[in-house]
Amino acid sequence: MDINNRTILIVGGTSGIGRELARRFADAGSAVVVGGRNADSLAALADEGFGTVEIDVTDPASVTRARDAVLRDHPTLDTVVAMSGVMMLEDLRDPNHFDAAQVTIETNLTGTIRVIDAFTPHLIERGTGTIVTVTSGIAFLPFAPMPTYAASKAGVHAYTEALRVQLADAGIEVVELVPPAVATAGQEQVNPHALPLDAFATEVMELLTQEPTPDEILVKGVLMHRWAERDGTYDDLVAQRSKALSMLPGRSA
Image (cartoon, rainbow, N blue to C red; front, side, top):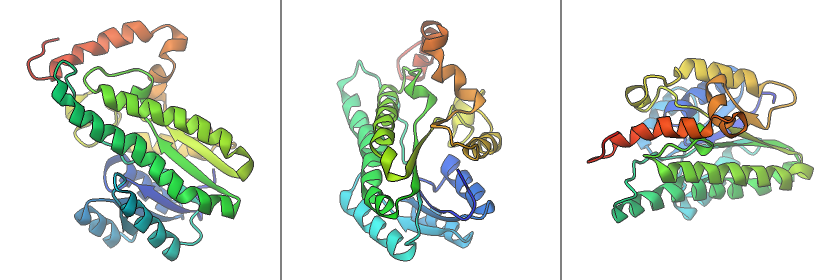
């Protein structure tokens, strides 16, 4: 993937991984528009020179307004990164977890589909472009305290696979970014083994520039998650990770 002279929209890029990738793309010479809900974060990014657009991926009308605004101001848009997401703890013994599950699916899976649907006709009309979805190592190696997060990201993975096949003859490449735990948004406190954000972003950009672009962007730190079933380590790793249930109120490891 040529990361120079692109026009890129990153939805969910106001903090963490998304914001860092926005900066890396801009440093490479691309024009970057960042979409999100936090007005203060968007204003700060605008001060850095980024284009910005307010978007709530759980609201169809908001997605439509954002699409129209982006395509009006950036008609050469050729890359869409859909990475809005929430991570929520859920105790499946308590039926009240359902609200968290619903928000997670609506944001991570349905929201991703909304964003892709909004911009796919534009990219098809151009006859070229890239769609990047963002899943997680947890999509392939579940993390018991966040069951719906894992399910939503597994859903995005499956959807991405189908999208790639369906758009294969339209000149659009479909790429899946699969992060491990990255030291951002509090992950460094929860997981001392979280990958430093700078190192993660550097490896991602190196992988993105490979020719041809890999279907899945897998940094070294996520390989054990992605290939656990193939390597025969799945059951042992799931058992080890089940100790994290102690994160839930009233639970012990």
